[in-house]
Image (cartoon, rainbow, N blue to C red; front, side):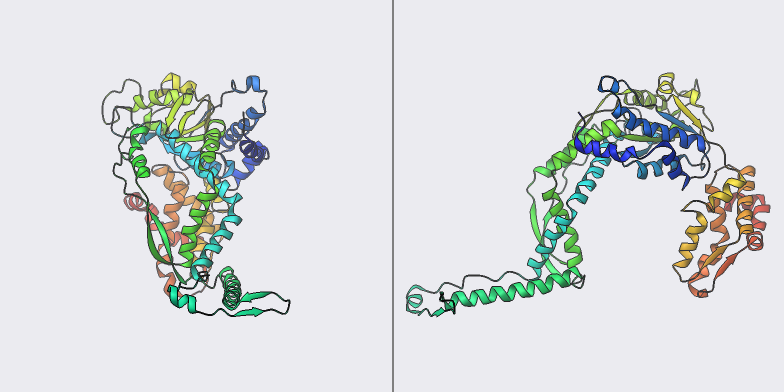
Length: 486
């Protein structure tokens, strides 16, 4: 049964139609329409499955995808943008970092545990947003208590005989009420304290007390006595022994003198811990993983060995595939929060497949990735669009960096065309690294400008085709130099 909070997450996905997903990806990624379309359909199917009749819902398996294409064409960028777009539990992992069980390294079940941790962070952030105003109000009150401690209501007790001899003076108010002089003084002190506190609160809200120092008590966590988290292939239960032991150790508080700004950060974490039910967060996160989780498995071609290859440094590649198979098919993976079913986790794999081919994967694993999309190599025209159209285009990034020094940077149209032409030529003559070649060309082109920028003043900088040719022509024509620099 889907909880209300998971329903809310699904409701957010309801507005993401395939066309809207593609349009969002188009803001950052040029071309690759087929890959964007396949990913958009797969994401929409996540929402559609939850809206299908319950009798058939569990039978609808996710259509896992393999993105095939050379490096630098947008495979990983699609993954990055999906993570921000979906709002669902999402992680990106490299298949080459896993080893077969029995070898030193990470086992493939670790990616499911990472997905659970990602989901917990996601759900916790949502909960923090819900109680953010209340948490900040509580922190402000605690900071005011530190800046202006409350007055003591009781005066020091006097010795018996002396106290008995002390005469008490009573005061009658205009309304006819009678109170002791001591009580009247305490009321006056409390009134002055309240007025001062209100003034301090306004200064605090205006940010004028951020550098004032206060003393707070910070919880000291016991040192972790046994850390197995870095041991390759260690089961999750063993890996968390050190964490479990540290939780059992008593926590001590240590006074620290910090600024109000730092105290606010520390106290805010404490208030969030008090206001958020951690068990509820874990329960919601586990459900999100099982119903909406997405794992992007990059560099899958690195575990696909050519048929008949045995031994060598990559002896465990086929073993990784065999270990990966049950997780992709659907199985129960143990985590420190409980068992997680991976039956409906969506897997998107990607690889360049320069040396191997998708058919070199074991047949069972191939069958669990029924959707295959080939990403095309980027052309000179694509490079021109990459440098002008996306919101994070390289030309805009460099303009922002130059703007930080007070100057301005402008690229003419013919300069962009020349840079794209040069990057495309270098990719043809050398290893094709796709759009990443633009980074090397741009870095070399603007090296002197970025070096001299702080000393040259704020005069505008204009880059045209002649500047590009003069700066890069010698490097591009010298084959040996080009290999090292571009």
